[in-house]
Image 1 (cartoon, rainbow, N blue to C red):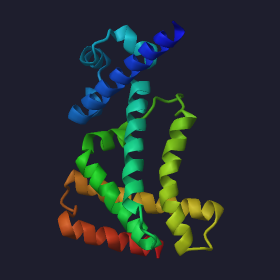
Image 2: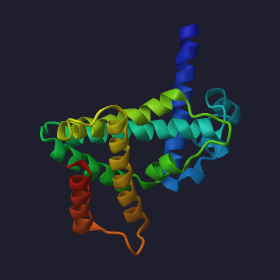
Image 3: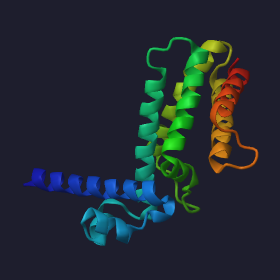
Length: 195
């Protein structure tokens, strides 16, 4: 009996999370309304709160799925590539492509902030750190002297720079680049940061 209850609970959580992901994909973070998500999933609002403490917890779960998808894309991007510079360029382009194809999920990942006094769960922090390891590995090969804090700082700098270029391109500001020009400058940026 306990096994059946657990399976039903897991199914409810999965359906609610799927409905939340679909809502964010369609309308961004603002669409993560628990009442609407409960209705889309076919459950009561109370059922949602049994699995997600509040809207922040639900958005963290959505962001966790987004991070998992980015991780899969990044792993595929470097699969079979041995050259560390080629790996870093492939990672940057894969990150850009993911953001372009999943703009609402990607934006939510970076726009959602917990209220003051509410800590980000450690498991979620670790999911973010896992993604940085994709960058740290090739960076270390290219710059063997980088270690410890220095390697961590350079990894974060590389990610931040690429992230900034991606962000501005998605905002389509007058300074943003698109198409081949963006791809060329992405390579230029990676070469300068990692070389």
